[in-house]
Length: 113
Length: 114
Image: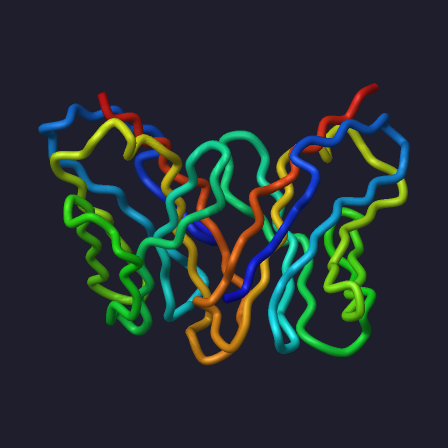
């Protein structure tokens, strides 16, 4: 069965610093990969997705992620974090159909001014 | 209205009450989902509907009863709930189930069972 690991439960960065959130997956075939963000009291918003092709994908709000098959990773990055980026971030992996989506447990990002 | 909407946003109910959660998507999608989000646990898929037909029920207790009258609306009927059912209930939709389409989420209903 597929699984997703987000090893960092909580990360704190200073505003303006760079950010990398880690995501590792376990699945035999090529997965479909997603990053979602959830602000307090809100649902999940899609940041970016990878299905195939260029392994570096650009998303909304200045985020990008890189698929590394050899490391089974899909880490999320942002060069300069803004205070409004404080939220919880979820990595998800899917295959075959839209319903087969497995989410990680999330990483809570805190941004200090 | 755009995207996926959910009502009510907050609900407090006693263990003997009956209530319903409503979800509506304005994206022209054909698949809809109910998820449960509890603190410190991964998102749990509860039900999946595709073209109004239920395609998945992930061993959800019968006190949760979904209904999908059309591709745009999804309900979750609640009765005789337990305190451990308190959680954020999220609705989502996707184009359909034929491909790895991304899911779009509503803001959720925060449910508290007293």
